[in-house]
Length: 109
Image 1: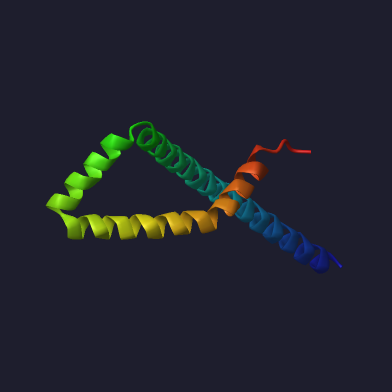
Image 2: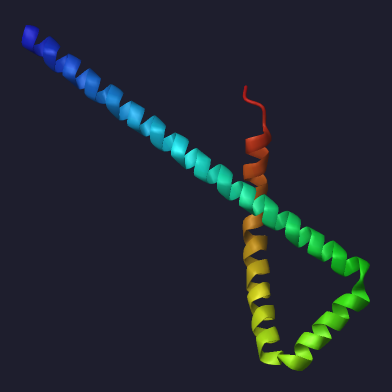
């Protein structure tokens, strides 16, 4: 009987340690997710500002584009291709980001 209680106590202690380790991992993962979301928020804000600036000054945007196209067309096309792929990826992930923001901003309860 005493041996069984000792085994149960040891098992309980092992489970408590496992729970503590899992909580620590969850805390670490939560911090990483928050950091990722803040990076996504900053990138979104930056791209929004760039888009607004381009809309307010279309001639300047066209001039910059023309200069780049004249001096380095291959590089400009490569950048445009990368930007298009990034935009497509962003569009596919935007609903996920929006959902994560909403769940993060919801009050607990």
